[in-house]
Image (cartoon, rainbow, N blue to C red; front, side, top):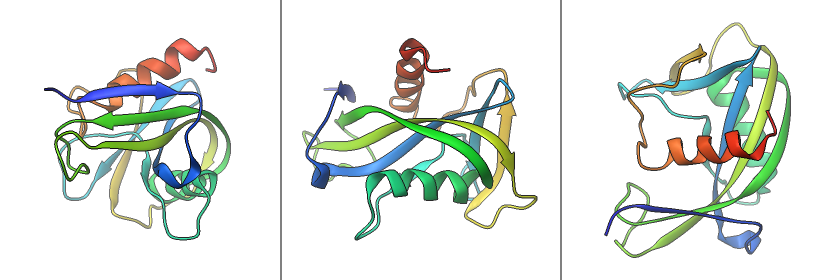
Length: 146
C-alpha cells in the first residue's frame, strides 16, 4: 500500500493536526528549506495545544517564511494514509487543513528552524514530502484561487 492523499470539505476540528500553506509572492511560489534537510517543502506544521487550526496556519507561515503581511484562506481538509513520518501505523489516517496564502512582505531575517526560503517560478525537484506536498499543490492549482 502506498501513501494516499484524500481531500474533504470538512472534518471534525479535533482531528486536524497539521496546517499546510501553499504560498505565492509576486506571482512566484514560496518554499522552505529546513536547517536539517536538503529538501524543500511548503510552509506548515503541527497544531499546538489550545490553538485553532487557522492560527496554526498563520503562525507557521510567519515562522517558516518570515511573512509579515499576507492574506491566507482555507481551502479544504486533507488526509494522509500510509507509511509517512507522522503516521504511527501503516494504515493510520491523519488530517490537516490546506490553505493558500498571498504574501506581500517578509521580515529581513528568519527566526526559526528554517535555513532559507525559496521564491521561484519553478517547483522544487527535491521535496521533503514527495508523495504528499506535490498533491496539495496540484489541488491548489486546480482550485483557481491563485
